[in-house]
Amino acid sequence: MSLAGLGSGLRTVVIGASGGIGGALAAALEADPAVAAIHACSRAGSGEAGGKRGVHAVDVTDEDSIAAAAARIGAEGPLHLVVVATGMLHQDGQGPEKTYRQLDAAQMMRAFQVNTIGPALVAKHFVPLLDRSDPAIFAALSARVGSISDNRLGGWYSYRASKSALNMLIRTLSIELARTHKQAVCVGLHPGTVDTGLSRPFQRAAKQLLTPEESAAYLVDVLGALTPAASGSVLAWDGKMVPV
View 1 (cartoon, one colour):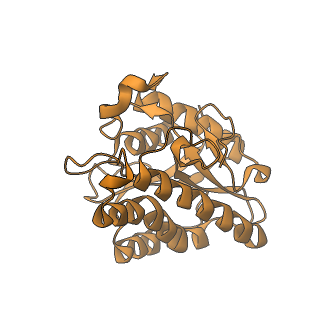
View 2: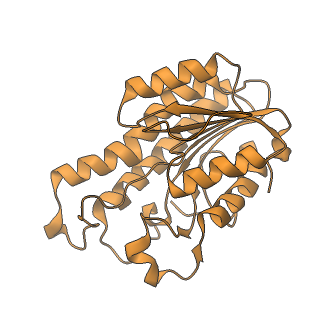
C-alpha cells in the first residue's frame, strides 16, 4: 500500500478527511513513506496538525472556503494528489428515493451540491496546483450506482444522478487536463461498500463489506498504479473499470 509508483516527496490533499473513508485515506497517506505532506481538509478543520499533516477547514458547499484552503496549501508548492472524499446519500432521516413519487427538489439540490458541484469547485481551485512536470492525480469518490449502463434496479434517483453527473465532470476535466498537465490523471473512485454511516442502512445487500481502512488501502494501491491512459475513467477499489 503506497504511492511510491508516483515518486517520492509527494504532496497530497484529502477533502472530506473527517469522514470514514476520507479519514482512513488521510491516515494511510500519512503513513506512506512516499508522502512528504498530507493536507487533511474537512468542514470543521478537525484533527491535530503536526509532522507531515496539515489541517484545514473546507466545506465543499462553500467555494470561498475551498479557495482559501487552496491558496494556503498551494503556497507551499505543487501538489501530486488531490482526493475529494465527500459524499451524501441520505440526510436528516430522509433516505434515497425508492420511487419517483418521493422526489423532492430540495433533497435533489442538496445531493448535487455535495456530490457533483462540490467536487467540481474543488477541481476549479486545486487542479491549477497540480505538478505540471511530474505525475499528478485528481480523484473523486464516485459510486457504482452512478453508472447509467449498469443501472438495473432503479430508485435512488438523486444519488444516482449526482454521481453520474460527477462521472461526466471527471471525463470532461480529464480532456482539458491532458492539454495542460501531460502526466496528470483524473479519475473517479468507487470505494466499495464501506462500513460507514453513509452505507449503514443498506449493508445487508452488500456482497462484500469493507472497513474504511481496507477500502483506503485498496484505493491507495489503485492510485499508485495509475497511468495517464486511465484518465477520465472510474475505477473500483479492486482496480476494475466501472462502466459509466
